[in-house]
Length: 387
Image (tube, rainbow, N blue to C red):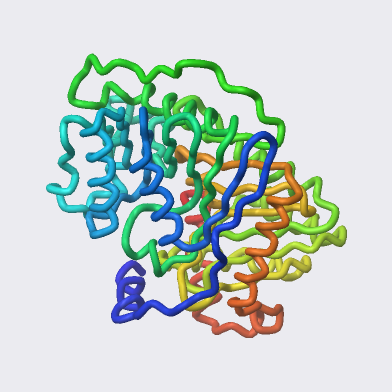
């Protein structure tokens, strides 16, 4: 199936898709700016790095060694050269295909490569197998970025993703999230005596925004509970955008129950994602969802990689966690959760723009699918708990 996945992407040219310009709304004591196009996001991230005065904290899952990845590397190195503290984290497994020369950094930068195999001799300890799937940038104490975008040229123009920039007290929560991960893994750097990353002061509580993070090493997974609580409280609408949708049955039941009590439940997924196995397993849930009245919308012409949700025009989330076992019960993930009508409204408007570029799947169309598709879904069903 991996060979089929590679074949179907061969020779494909990127096609245009609708986006919105970055928009900013006030949330609590700060602001949140939403991005739906990689170039807009990268320009602002690089501008923030170029303007850093004291500290840059940069963390990503994928960091391609292409032109875009090089721009970020050079910007971070330049910041370090002018005396800014620069800390970087990237996932070793996700970047196995990146050329080794790109992963050689100036000594002025503090770089942590999260290892491909992190369990060591504790191979039996499931808490040590999570990947670092987070995407964070924090500049000084005033600006933070969080969302689904990795770093690479394809993501800049060819993928439809969602990211946010935050200011205000929530930035401190992002700083603390970065520092906690760094300190938990700092001894994996070449220098075994690496000093911990210490924060200068405690943050102010921001009642409108929370930063939720999964920490498999500590067996802490609040993002799944965050989603389920919001869905179970819904009375008007639940709109989900997901790159990969491989939920457990409890999650499926929550969506079905919401739809059956009259909630407008919409699930927006890629028509064809970059992982064919995820697509086939995801389709195994469609019958249950469609029968309950959930609308399934399939995004065409581009890979939609966003991980967002809105509920009742009040609650919303943007982050790195997919609705699958790896994200919700396995990887290091981070999501911004907000209870704010203006931000939720903005994300609903983005959802409607994306929906205009979708093909809706009907029950009749789904039931009439080919026999080999039904066989493939049934054959892959045992893999659900593993992905």
